[in-house]
Length: 89
Image 1 (cartoon, helix red, strand yellow):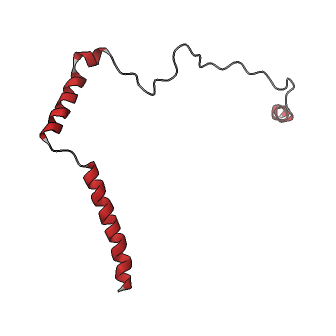
Image 2: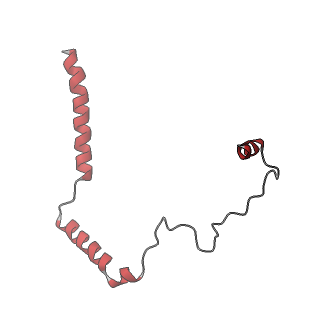
């Protein structure tokens, strides 16, 4: 009997969680929700929406900021031992 309890308790928990998720994520079916969806689509297709595009969140930095890095200064003007060995062969 205790083995069945260990199987039924997790099954009931999963069933309850999936039922809650289904209830929260289902599409609304009322008449008003259909009217709202249609209004939202028509507003997206309106000429006013085409004239003023929304700024994209991933548009990058403003154009006045430069993306160039300053030139790096050499750390050591003498060639390293490894580069000398590579040149010798």
